[in-house]
Figure 1 (cartoon, rainbow, N blue to C red):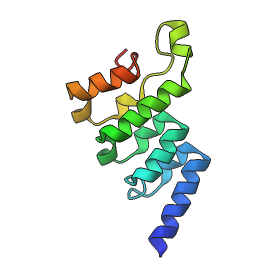
Figure 2 (figure 1 turned 120 degrees about the vertical axis):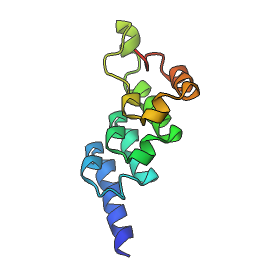
Figure 3 (figure 1 turned 60 degrees about the vertical axis):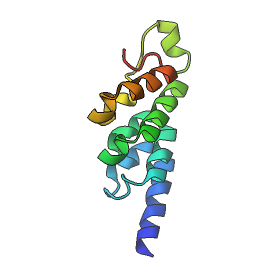
Figure 4 (figure 1 turned 90 degrees about the horizontal axis):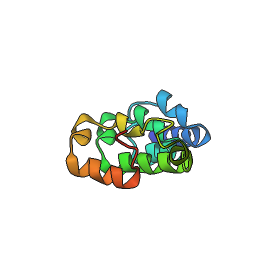
Length: 113
């Protein structure tokens, strides 16, 4: 139906350019597949995900992993992060969760820099 067509358009848009997530309907910004497609292009697209998905450890850790891939070698070369981690866009609850933060640090040692 119509919702499926809208979802397919939103998915194609974020696959073409991650920033399209900023302009999709709120329901699409709450769609795991659409958000993961955007994150796979740019970790900072997490900022445009729904609050619910920004509270998902799976989604946020995927963004942290993508950030590591996209900055691979650069942070280590400079000994400091050249771009802030997308963890800044995670929900407050996740950022206050010690176990979650430790898992994020295991992926990206610069996550709390």
